Image (cartoon, rainbow, N blue to C red; front, side, top):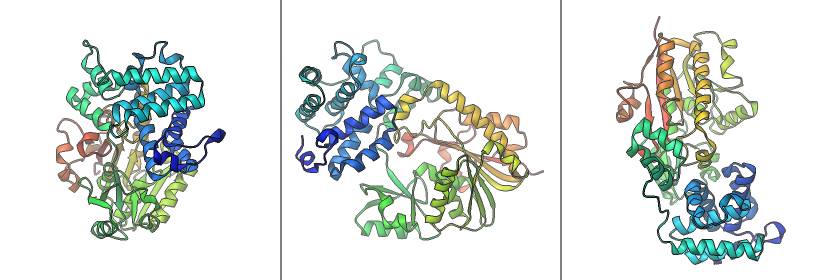
Amino acid sequence: MTPSERRSGAAGRSGREATARSVALDVLIRVEANGAYSNLQLNSSLQKAGLSREDAGLTTELVYGTISRLNTLDYILAGFVKKGLSKLEPWVRCLLRMSLYQLVYLDRVPPHAAVNEAVRLAKQRGHQGISGMVNGVLRSAQRAGRLPVLPDDAGEALRIALTHSHPEWMVREWMEQYGAETAEAICRANNEPPAVSVRVNTTMTTRERLLDEMKREGLDASASAVSPYGIVVRGGGNLALTSWYKDGLLSIQDESSMLVAEAVAPEPGMNVLDCCSAPGGKTSHLAELMLDRGRVVACDLHSHKTELVRDQAARLGLEAVETRAADALRLGESYAEGTFDRILLDAPCSGLGVIRRKPDLKWTKTPEDTAAIAELQRGLLDAVCRLLKPGGLLVYSTCTIESSENEEQVRRFLDRHPDFEAADRGSRLASRMEDKLRCDAPGLQILPQDYGSDGFYIAVLKRKAE
């Protein structure tokens, strides 16, 4: 146990002292055994544990790192656990993974500390035989040198999958779409820690003014190179707890995501529809770009989600946002054809562009999921496109990098709707991101390695004037 862990001292269940590693282990067990979402379980556990900031950081690193490197850790452990990983109790399996993660990937954690803490936790939760097995496995891995050791006959897809910890099927898909070099770069980027970025509410302040305030407060903040509305903050803690957030001067949003509202290009006085709006980041950005003049109809399927959008707009002092709980597939029953000047369809998707933030996605998604979600996206596009005025813009966006959900989806839409055309070029956004526009496909595709932001796809579609 580290000195910091001893100092952080909240008592866990069964009278055990909560430490960085014990809390991380509890989270990993719940994720594995109960299918809990790692981010929600981690946040809940950290709130209850009362760890120091340093230990909370270690817990977070252990949870996300272990989940992110799951298949590589299991591959390595399979060579040291004689009876097989699948025959171990879930808590033992999670303990071995978490401890091996420290040995292989965390240079700042002394190997003896990782092993000793693993043995201590094994004794605490199991019996002498289990603690001896844990000690033996980890000592053997420690003596083995650089890991993982891949077989000589490993193909390119398997090599990338095990080196960068992704499912082999996912790697193969990306190799087919982007080539092996880019696929490996995607996987490598997905294992890097995500940046913290905020969007400035330009109805209340300017980026320059807020950036100056942050620097005066000692934050390591810089202007986003991706969005003119963004600021990147390093080591600033939870910015949702700051007065800037509470007073509505900023929203926490990924840099790539900030580009979507800019692509919609709404103007003051327009009538705008956001079809799948929760939790409201893009909705509020639309209203900000409109100087809070006009109307942004923010729809989502569930009323508790539209409440999130409403709360976001209220925090930011935006009155142009009008929320509505409705199925986007049936919006044609409520609005006449040609009602809106602009429509945003930020569609449900596989989410494979945000693996850096949600490493669980790597292991829960299947190839079949992509096919199923593509059908929903098609239905949504067909359902909302008629609500757009001739000459208006429909922006289709996703936080994935799958071509079947992105450019292929848009190509098929344009084939079905000859009164629409691709309109990605000619805008300020297009000129700034020209290298991300493809000559052979509609839309703008950002990959995780491009800017260190989320993978995102944005296509601008114009309804031809009658």
